[in-house]
Image 1 (spheres, rainbow, N blue to C red):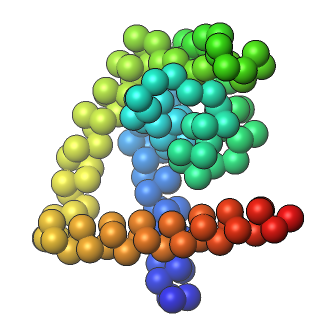
Image 2 (image 1 turned 60 degrees about the vertical axis):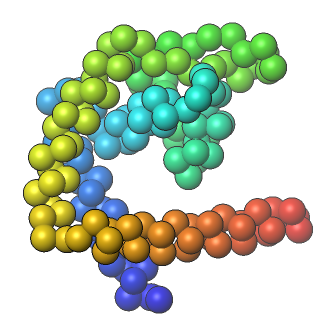
Length: 147
């Protein structure tokens, strides 16, 4: 398992670095792109804590990035009827255009580095990685419940 973890860490680093270069011209980073994607994928506006949970990130780091996105006009905040202090994060038209442009750039990028890989193999890797993530999350949840 250790060699697989090391490969995943290396891959993650390469994806983030390459993603940063890919979207730099849009005023984005991989982290900003990821958060815009999480906002877009959500069924309804969510507070920062929920976005952090959805991407497996630290709430404070996500809050900092959301604040930067807000400063740049890519997201706005709305009142949360369920929690006074935890505002809802909503993508603006400008943010939607930036995300759309990033996704447009992503298509040839993904097609290039997945060339020669079968859809079946990619799906197997996705399922294995998702199962490992789920197990780690379950262990973390159990540890937090025991505290």
